Amino acid sequence: MPYNTSMKIYVSHSRKLDYVHDLYEPLKASSLYPKHEFFLPHDAGSDRVKTKEIIQTAGVLVAEISYPSTSQGIELGWADAAGIRIICLYPEGTKYQASIRFICPQPTTYTSAHDLIKKLTTLLANS
Image 1 (cartoon, rainbow, N blue to C red):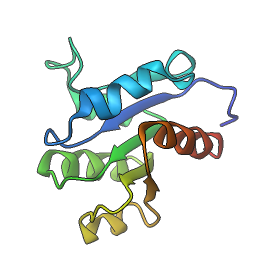
Image 2: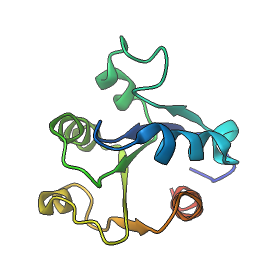
Image 3: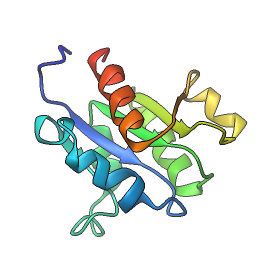
Image 4: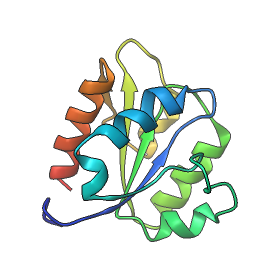
């Protein structure tokens, strides 16, 4: 899929993450947000949506993997089974679950919200 084409992107994360501050706000402030259709599972109005159906129609699943989460593991399994591209990101110095490598063999580190957006932009360009 060419980079100039809009993608449907499902964003997966643990509830332990300060996802509003560390993930949702940086994404919404980035140039990526108006360009693509992001689904943020814990954003207002997203609580009664069947996420499995959304994941199955996504072009990419972006997973912030700094905290282990059963729900996120299920989401990653759905995406993998549906053949959806999975991008895994985690803060430098954080240890993630070793089993993540079965789904995402090359997780990407980031050092700040700005770096996360920069690296995600590059990874999406290679989708």
